Image (tube, rainbow, N blue to C red; front, side):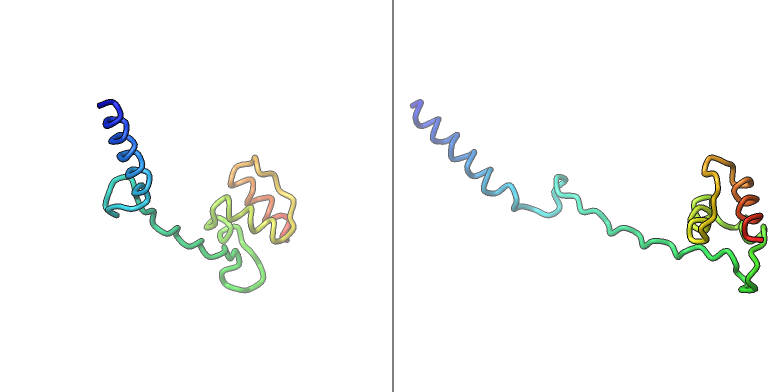
Length: 95
């Protein structure tokens, strides 16, 4: 009798192991994740294309976009400052 129970348990474990990757796709254990959103287009500070970046154009950008712009332009700015301070530093260095 004990051998019979051991064999049944062994068969159940083997069956569970073999079929663990297979199964119903709608089960709660297999959740598909949506594709990541595409990255936003790079920020353009000089919207009108006149070669001069105004403070108004810089204010339209986020702080991270301002850091990206400063990096592309090889400008030295403090990342710990407020957005207004970052805009002032960028604007003064672009003049």
